[in-house]
Length: 77
Picture 1 (tube, rainbow, N blue to C red):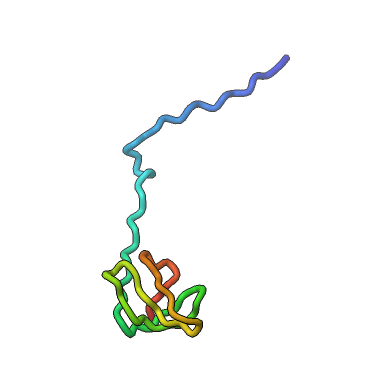
Picture 2 (cartoon, helix red, strand yellow):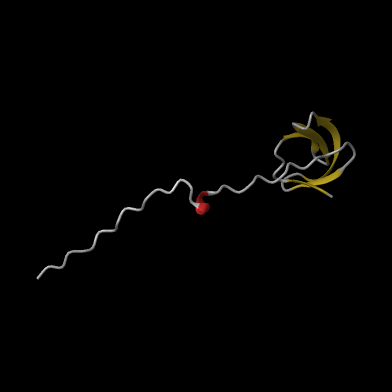
C-alpha cells in the first residue's frame, strides 16, 4: 500500500492584505554646516558644506568626503 503525499494547496494572492504593507521610510536627517557627525567607516568629522539636501561634505581626519542622501552610516552627534 503506497500512501500519497498531500500536495500543498496554492495560496491565494491577497493584494489588500495587511501583511503586504511596506513600512514608511525613515525621515532623512538634516545636517547643517559645522555639525559634528560620526560615520561607521570614516569615524568622527565635521560638516563643512551642504549641497541642496542631496549631499554633505564632511571633513574627517583622513580627508574630506562627499556623502549623498540617504545617509545610512552618518549620525549627527
